[in-house]
Amino acid sequence: MEKIKMEKISAAKRTKKIRYAIRDLVFLARKFPDVIYLNIGDPNIYDFQTPEHLIQAVSNAMHENRNGYAPSEGIPEAREAIALEAQRKGIQIQAKDVLITTGASEGIEMALTALLDKGQEFLVPSPGYPLYDAVLNKIQAKPVNYFLNEENKWQPDIEDIKKKISGKTRGILLLNPNNPTGSVCEKETVKALIDLAQEKNLVLFSDEIYNKLVYEKKHYFTAGLSNEVPVLSFNGLSKAYLVPGWRIGWIEFFDPKKLIPEYIEGIHKIARARLSANHPLQYAIKPALEGSQEHLKEMNSKLKERAEFTFKRLNEINGISCVKPEGAFYAFPSIKVKNDEIFVKKFLRKEKVLLIHGSGFGQKPGTSHFRIVYLPSIPILEDAFNRLERFVKNIRL
Image (cartoon, rainbow, N blue to C red; front, side, top):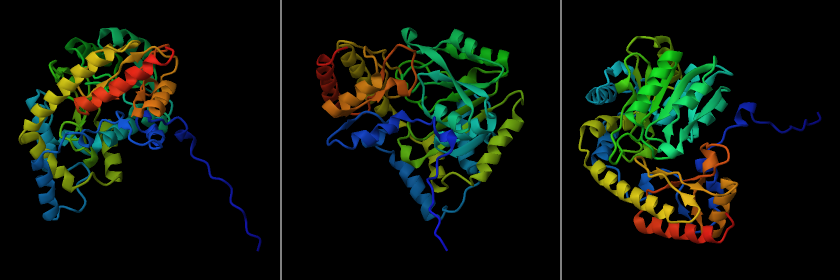
């Protein structure tokens, strides 16, 4: 019998538009020795350490044989701790309104998947976290980018959002604090977004993973300012509790007028189909939220100092302009180049420092930016900025 030769098997069309700039450039960086990586927001690869009581809680859970499947919605004590934390912030939810996920990222993907059919639209900030665009493209929905105003400390442009809403729009995302700009929303901005969502009958997504990493400005929770509009808040242990590799996050469902029970059940259907989030690691949630918060004082002190140094140093470089970050651990400076992706690749090859091009996060047409992670110590940042200044002096802006 003649052997049939197999042909190449192609990827699904839905994968064609999926991009994730934060990690895509890592493959290029690995070709070079001694690179300073300023691309990924992972505090643990710098001088930040997971609080010991969280490690002990997980160890205890493992030794107590909590190593089987967890309930699909998460363990009761963790859900209760998250609900109590929300109540302390003035958000009236119960444990039943919490879903534990494999990092906030899984929760985001579940929530978008349950909300949008093919061709429907969802408003995402530009610049913003590229995961949202990637997921929306995967499920064949349409990400519609609204602009943040660089001249107004990267606040969402409410007028631009109004222009982008159509009959196909299902929801709006607020990243607060924002990744990649490090901006924190004003109370009036959050309230205007809530009013707009109410007027247009839209669900609000509020990504608040960096809410405990804010230096001086007050952070306003979207659900805490809403009386009627349904809000899905996304959070987790990764950033503030220094365990990004544990992949423990959650969704808080705030639905005071009972407008989205069918939608919430749709998300739970997806959660049941994927079984559960990591079981023993969920036992870190209660001690994280209710135990010592001392590490946050030290962390925010370090980050504030590094943010101020980054802001000052970048603005000293000719051709670069940076808005001062107010939270998280990112800055998003503008640079006078035609193509920021080519710029960061050339900079990587020449000076062995990895930044991420602004076009990977979205930006206004005709502008160029890059994102920098200022988690490293001041000496490492100073070295990186010296290399950047040297490189910029020798190229034509």
